[in-house]
Image (cartoon, rainbow, N blue to C red; front, top):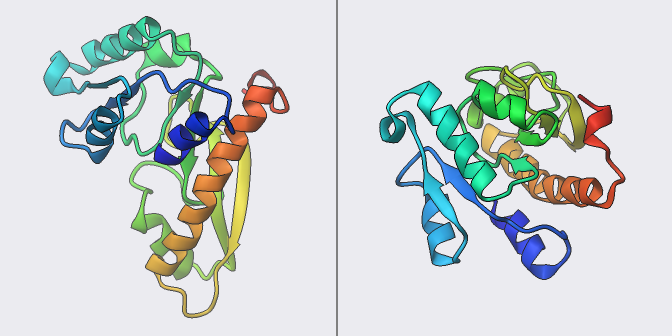
Length: 187
C-alpha cells in the first residue's frame, strides 16, 4: 500500500489513492493512513453487526469516495457479493505465489513460501489477479518470477517475492491506468 501511494504522490502512477479500508482497527495501515492524511475507515463485522452489513458498508464507503478501482494490499477477508457485483473486473489483489499454484483459503504469508520449498519448486513469484468470489481464483493480470535456490528458507523466499510484489503491483497499475491492460478482457 505504501509503495502504491508513494508512486501516486511521485506522479509515476497517475491515480488518486482515495480511501483505505481495513478490517483490523489496530492495523499499521490505518495508522499510516492517518499520519499521512489519506482517507481511511475501519470496517468489520464487529463495527457493522454482520457480514451482509459489512458488505453494504464497504459498498457505501467505496461509492461515497467515488472509487473506480479497488486495490487489495494485505486485506485478508473475502469481498462481499454486493461489492463484487458493483466492481466486477475492478478489484485487484496480489498473491505471493505464481497462481494458480499455492492459492486458496489459508494460503498466505509464510505458509505459501513453506509449501513452495517443501514441494521443491525451482521458481515462485508474485501474481496480480482479479478478485472473484473465491480465494485466489480470479484471472491472472500479471506475474513476476523469482528463483528458489537450494538452501533458501521460507524467509529468504518471502524477501525475494516481496521485492517483486512492490514493483509488480505498481507497474501493473501503471499499465492498467495507461490502457495497456484492459481488465474487461480478462474477466
